[in-house]
Image (tube, rainbow, N blue to C red; front, side, top):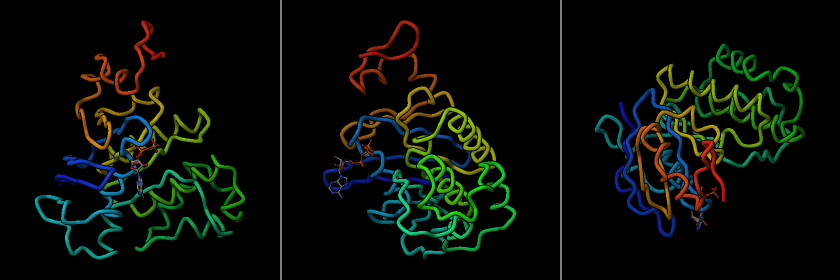
Length: 231
Ligand SMILES: Nc1ncnc2c1ncn2[C@@H]1O[C@H](COP(=O)(O)OP(=O)(O)OP(=O)(O)O)[C@@H](O)[C@H]1O
């Protein structure tokens, strides 16, 4: 069932955004700094704003409790900060609902986290912490994954690995929506949502947008004859 956000408005941040995301979709949210990507992800996760503007399968999310919310949504913040010296092993289990141990083990294996399990999360490098925090966000197997820049701070091996992992999460039936800056990763995302100044200005399959000038114009860039972008 689709997660539907209707007329999502947030003062000075979002203006009347309508969006529906179905299970199995892999969506990239793109746009210049400050255009509202984080605000939209947070609104869709019900973190800011109100559940009145969200529906799943036609049912309003008004009145949902913390456990139900945790089963529905997982939000990965763009910040990689961890403020306390919690061991990685404990951080991975930290969730408002019970998390299956085999799921955690599979993520530890896939994201090669074994060497860090006894380390304090705040002692890891930024990229190491990014992998741990992504594993933590995926562990509860929420239906809708709202991930703010999950490919930031990673070396090329991990960018490609996590692009594959997100595709697998979508193939498993989860809806994955990702705020993204690196246009070279767009090919992993069948659907693109373009934002400017708090509004959704395009929402279409990637193949429709990538051959137009819309993405270049969004960032005040020009398309390169070789397929990239330039100033
Ligand atoms: N707590 C807040 N109070 C007031 N304005 C805010 C607040 N948080 C964000 N904003 C503003 O809302 C707008 C959208 O911010 P948001 O973080 O959603 O953008 P973004 O597209 O995720 O940006 P970036 O690419 O830089 O991460 C920005 O102009 C920002 O300054």
